[in-house]
Length: 211
Image (tube, rainbow, N blue to C red; front, side, top):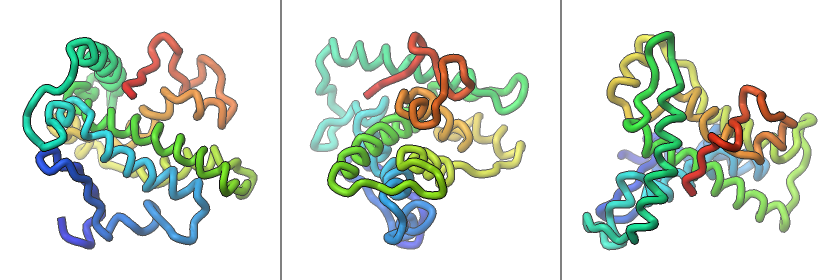
């Protein structure tokens, strides 16, 4: 990637994550923004890329970038059970009647988003202990965190592009990149006062948590 590219990646062979200068600007990162916004945007992206080392593909490579199974049989079995939940979750996200995501295709990116949101939220809570975040426009720091993720990741995509994406793009539609991870997080429900049965809250018996 070139320096002005707004993107990020994990390279399993080199066991590295890369963030070009292009993504280190609003809405992903702003040196003048409150912590909640930066943790909720670029923080989730950083956690996302770190977690790629432990998704359905990255987990197959060891610390030296070699295609080598370094997992115990029990850990691998539990990992596959947990990722099956994510596959099922995204299989049920429809872009229009009869057309839905391929859960296995988007699994790695879906794991990344979920793990990234969890890691970033945990880091934000630790940061708040040292530097408490302010309430802004009536929104609590926790609400600001999740709003920042939606504002950064969400976008508007033409129906034709969505149909093409679900056929071969390993990334879910942006709408579900936002909804998918947070609907599995009790912290999100608590931040916005959501109840069991609300649209953005998955029941505990179907809630997905890989990491």
